[in-house]
Amino acid sequence: MKTPGIVIAGISSGVGKTTISTAVIQGLLKKGYKVQPFKIGPDYIDPSYHNMISKRRSRNLDVWLMGINGLKESYLKNSIDSDITVLEGVMGLYDGMSGKNNFASTAHVSRILDLPILLVVDAKKAARSLAAITLGFIKFERKIRIAGVILNNIASERHLRYIVEAFESKIKIPIVGKIFNDKKLIYYERHLGLIPRMELSATLQNSIVDNSKIVAEHLDFEMIIQIAKKINYLDKSKFEKFSMDLVKRKSRHQESKKLHNSKVKILVALDKSFNFYYQDNLDMLHKRAKIEFFSPLDDIGISEDTTGIILGGGFPEVIADKLQNNSSMRRSILDLAQKDIPIYAECGGLMYLTKTISGYKNNKKKYKMVGLFDADTLMTGKVTLGYTEALLNNDQTYLGRTRKVRGHEFHYSNVVINKNDLDLIYDLKKGKGIMDGRDGFYVHDCIASYMHTHFMNSTFSDRFVERCVRYSRK
Image 1 (cartoon, rainbow, N blue to C red):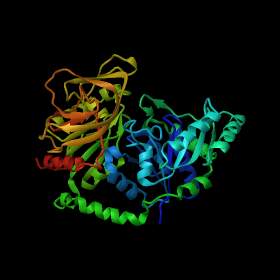
Image 2 (image 1 turned 60 degrees about the vertical axis):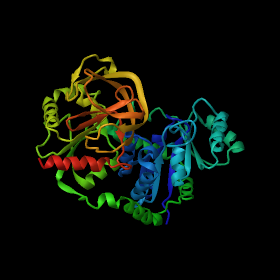
Image 3 (image 1 turned 120 degrees about the horizontal axis):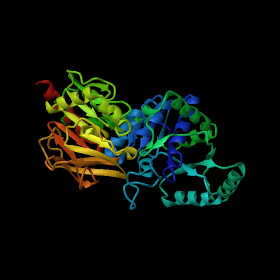
Image 4 (image 1 turned 135 degrees about the horizontal axis):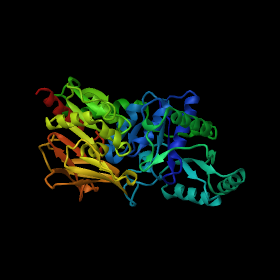
């Protein structure tokens, strides 16, 4: 019994992949299918839009972060009870880690999972030329199965006629979507892409659901479902064997461990400022410990029975004034950090633990943050973006003797160190980090970096929980 699946890819970023992915999910739900969404690549925001429509947790699939086996494990485990999967691609179809090959691209993931691709083509400012572009994508890699085309931002019926005429003479795969430019379909963006769902009002969230319904009316679902059923060698019958092999590989590491420790309570920051988390990471932590969420914006402080804190990425710069105003929370986190509670912070969490944040929208005012690190965060107009690979140069942290850590970074800020006596525990083979190819502050028992990590292909979650257990026994 096979699980049908489809990949929504684009010729580039900004062609409407998220809009169309949510519309495909919406249309399939309307037809009675159980839909499991996925997002290819390192992305926290797009999955939150998938969740809004599907009512299921979207998962990320990234070869660099998770490894091929980790990617397959997440895909199979999370699609086992679904009727069909919808995978939203990253950037353009063939865009990955380099120009030399498809590694970590949408094309690569579609090949690993043997899933057919619907190619989203932005029809703005072209007609017959779109056939040439599409033909180029089809012929660029013969082993990559582009099975259908979705035309987006069509200007008029005449414009559509010209495109269809060009396709009929050159392209042998079907057009399964014809979406006209509609200025009423608005998605709000900021410097890191779409605005996270948690920051949207109920009215705006409802408008996104309505947008998905409108776009879905212009998609040929009979053809999409037919395409989705054509290719998928990772069928449910193979899930059990793959799972057993995975258990055998991990048995030595897990046999002496208690799977869940009720005495370990990890607080995870979750509000409008901090909401960048991979669902797989949270699931892995939840298997070993009690997980609760808290808000650095709204809560008074950290509860006394807490044994660990995680501060994920997000946008602390956007409402830095409100974070500053919650001085009791800032003091509570600083006090616990100085008492060596295990803390893990990424990007926005790193920024929150510095002394100040300034520079958002050219606002020079410095807003006070936790102040665990003698450093300040300055927002810039320059993006730092890409995959990272770190070598750990300190074996005294809760990561132990872990050598390599893979991740990614995506930010518009610089952390300015006021004194040069702060430890940086990561030497980056790939990436920029906090400064000069180094990343990861380490103070007391807190690790804070620009690098985001995925726990699927590492022992990161186990190491962190083990340190939380040790802290609980103090």
